[in-house]
Each structure stands twice: as C-alpha cells, then as structure tokens.
Amino acid sequence: MDDFYTARDSILPPLPWPSIAPPFTKWVFFDEHMERFFAACKTVSLDVGMDRDGVLDALNRTAAVNGITDNAHCRLMLTRGVKTKPFQHPSLSQSGPTLVIIIEHSKPVDRLQSQGISLATVPQVRGLPMSQDAKYNSHSKLNCVIACLQAEQAGADEALMLDPHGFVNTTNACNFFIVRKGQVWTSTGDYCMNGVTRQKVIDLCRANDIPVFERNYSLVDAYSADEAFLTGTFGAQTPVATIDGKQIGDGNRPVTERIQRLYRDLIRKSVS
Image (cartoon, rainbow, N blue to C red; front, top):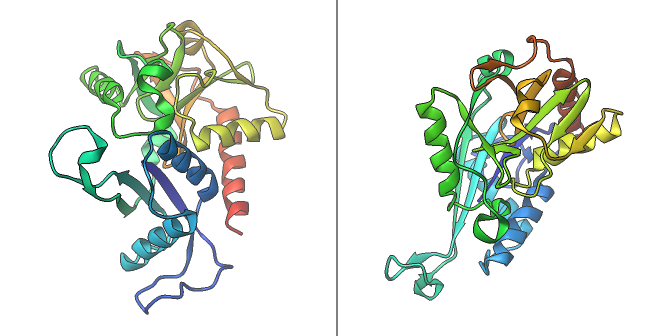
C-alpha cells in the first residue's frame, strides 16, 4: 500500500484521453513512493503486474475519470488477487494481482494545522523488523490499529508509540519530530515507517543549516520540547499541541513554520 498527493502543474499538457480528462496533475514525489512500493512488493514476493509507467498511467486514468485535478489524495493498494479459500497461502490466489486505487479530493483540516493535534502515549509499541517491519507499509498493521484505538480511548487524535527499548518512535500513522533549542530530532528510523515526507524534512534541514539528528530520545525529551510535529504524505507537517495532556512549548513554532515554508517551496519546484 502507498499513498500520494498531487499538486497542479500548469506546464504539462492536457491528458491524452477523452474529453472527460481534467488538466494534468502531477503526483508529488512519485519516484520516491514507487521505490518504496516496489521494494516492499519484491520483499514479499508480490508481482505488481506492471512497471512504474503502468502504475502512473493507472493513477492518472483514475484521477481523470473522477474529474480530480488538484489536492488529490490517493491510496494505492495491491493484493495477490482473488483466493479460492480465505487462507494465507499465496498459491490460493487464482487470479491477480489486484490493484485498487482510491482517490479523493481532500485537504488537511485548517484547525489541525493552526492549533495542532493531541497525542497520547500508548502501551502498544513498534515491533522489531523480524516480527512487524514498518517498512512494508502493509495492510497488516494490527499494532498500529490497536495503538490508534488506545489513543482514541484516551481522548487523543493520534497515538505516540515507543520502540521496543522504550525510546520515542512514531505515531500510529505518521512520523514524529521534536524541536529542542533550534535542533530537530527524530527517531533513528530503525522501527518506523520509511516515510517519504520524513526524509524530505531531514534533507531540507540539512540543506538549510537546520541542525537535525536521527537519534534515540525519551518521553522526557518530548514533553520538554519547544515544538513537535508529525510528517506524512497528506498532512505534510502537522504541529503537535499536547502529548499526554502536557502542552508542548509555548505555542510558538518558528522552526516548524520554517520547515513548512521550505517544504511548500519544494513542492512547487517539484511540479514546475
């Protein structure tokens, strides 16, 4: 499974399809998403049935048929296909693979971008690579589903998950960053999703003289941080207001806001 976001590209020509086709949109960081997608499929011996150009064509056709031209969020899901029996063994898939593309016109909620979201630390942890490697980005993320339920029951927007050693790792759906004295910290990446937006933020920090560290750190560091934010394909960089009911910083987010501006500039360059 992978997800994408689009931005308007006024330079490229219209789609070469019927009149229902809207002006062309460009999928943001398509190559990076495809690298992750095809790597995960190869690891689990899942034949995609098409190359990158084929996936791109399928995405574009789906957007065209639905008349979506901008601010499109897409979920691309691949299964082994229709099974003769509802069991795990791959030989039971008699037809496939099955590619499912769900595209919706959607934008992040303004309130969450301005006020920030609430996190609750949950007992469900991110697993070891040999048990539940987050880099698969699969549908089988029961630990994340449980974490999401635990956060909801605690009255929070998302769950803050620790790694097997008790260090802060990620949320149930996004990568997690904190800012301390002008420095940007995120986890080592050993147990979290290899997020495309996560890596873009790290690269932007390094290119713009913002100190950034991939390291182990504890809840003490997170609670006492000056700023915190999440990264993801859909929300880009979403500020965190509270963790376990504790306010993060004083409400000012200069580093987060600078990263948001740099990221918006990067998006504009990527579609021009």
